[in-house]
Length: 253
Image (tube, rainbow, N blue to C red; front, side, top):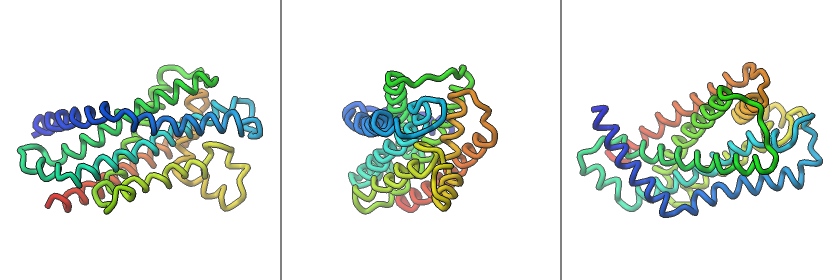
């Protein structure tokens, strides 16, 4: 059964990746927006924001990486919605393939596309002056957190992709996720925020994830932030997976 599932998922993943290569503009679009934001904040607003001794691009990059993922998963919901409307799901159900492999192929496609976007954004940040003294282990930890965060948001994107009535509704859910880093420590220290906003910023998932990534990049003690970040990512992943699979079963039943 496992071999059957893995083979079906690999075949469907190949199909989805071919669609990505034929429409590379989706990756370009999801990459350009965070790069444009990074350029604007570093070269327009960066001089007016005090983040201590480190350069603003070093401070900003973790939040930009999360925004890159949040903008990228909108296309996961879009692709899933288009497959639902085209009737391809019904065709797959008539074939002897593992049912869950259809969703996993979309999820893994999102992971690959987002990793490409993250690498491009990171390369641009290096050109803008981003530097990290972190060794191999912290970089692997950063990669692990970003992969976990991408999987969590991708399974979250599956839900509107399956249940939305319009293509706009399928992708619009990502807008609050893109906006969330602005109410976190991603762009400015939370200590500079007014009371209620600061309270929200310090207790939402993006802040703990951003702080953990920033500490890993700068080789600072991560403290409890990394465990809170992992707890948020795993919690969102589990809840989103359960709701997505329930929605999928209702759709194909």
